[in-house]
Amino acid sequence: MSKAVTFDKAFASLEKLVNEIEQDSIQLEDLAQKVKEANVLIAYCENKLRVITETIEQERKK
Amino acid sequence: MPAVLQLSELMGEIDDAIRQRFAGRLFWIKAAITDVKKYPDKRWCFLKFIEKEGHNITSEMKGVFWSATYHHIENFERETQQVFSSGLEITCTVRVRFHQRFGLDLEVMAIDFAYAVGQLELERKQTIERLLKENVHIRLQPNGSFSTFNNRLPLPTVFQRIALVTAPNSDGYRDFTEVMGKNKYGYAFSIQPFFTQVQGDAAATLIMHQLSKVKNQLSDFDVVVIVRGGGSDTDFKSFNSFDLCNYMADFTLPILTGIGHDRNTSIADMVARQHKTPTEVATYLLDGNMSFEKDLLQLKERFFNAVDNRLQSANQQLTYHRRIIISSSPHTILKRGFAMLMKQQQIVTNPALLQVTDEVQVILKDTILQTTINKKESNVESSNL
Picture 1 (cartoon, rainbow over the protein chains, first blue to last red):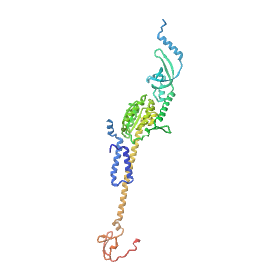
Picture 2: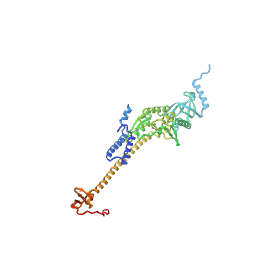
Picture 3: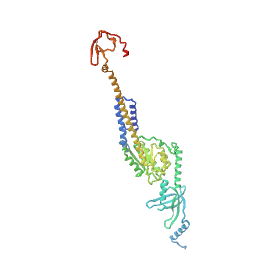
Picture 4: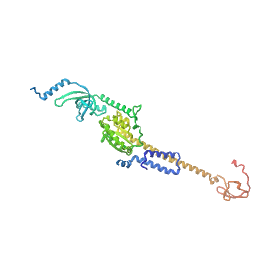
């Protein structure tokens, strides 16, 4: 996950995925890939809530 | 040679004169106080009363609180929410005392809180009027609160990087960091303290200085938190300072205050987002993150429900198609009692291709009949089948 991704962006991406699936606009063969993407986004938010990335501290020390 | 008096004799005469004129009398005076030295353990307080014309002191007199009246200072601080310190103007009742060694002073018997509260209220009102007049981004709401550039800024979805403006080793600092650090959800925060004095005459300027440092690294933070401890510290005057409040009102990162008082709202609270105590600010930030996580988990559930529904729907479609295919298969049709006609290994669907004497195969469910056509005629009743 890129550094530039924020909670807002991750949440919005997840919402987009949900809407696409709910509206059947995702091909069945792409579903597994979308589940993978969603899991990455959810894990990203969950981890980021509990782990301050080292980047912040590194930036601060500069 | 004139009669020479012992110093004590002269002082005694002065003492007599003063007693004659002032003994047993109380006077209400209004004066500024300076050089305030409090000794809480002994419950004494020494100070000077002064009166000025411009910058010049025109009258000055020593003042004192003894232990019997020291509680007036504590009451004053509690009632007016400001520290009894140099620079205040007070009204109080005093009695005139003279001591042959320590000289003349005024012993304070009581302080008029109403006057001090009135003065503070006046200063507060003047700051509010000035902010509304000079800061075009501040609007007074019908309920008396302020809408400012700062408190209209949207809050981030999640709070993680916090610029904390507070006094070092203060209750406020400890309370805030403890609640944040020991949160049961395990949320991580990066809290960078910007230490400052938060009470006294210089506090407003010092807080602004720390805020200006935050401003230099805005992108490092999600939010600014200003906290101070409660307890007996009751000096909120700096939080009504025009310069500080004006600076906060236009600050480009959301500011949350937890200035630690229950009764009054300072103007600094009004221009930012007010929470009563440092603990309440911390709880608010934690709740914000919890709310995000709750939304996230709901979305996660919705996502996997949608995936399940999608798979289930695909399965249903597959089942339907399978059923159609099965019901249309020759095997199913033959099982129902129909027969299939083949000629030269080809299924015949067009009777025009069949002639009398043609050899054909009649395929039944379990049987194949080799047969020769000996008659051909129209089936006029087929539409009735």
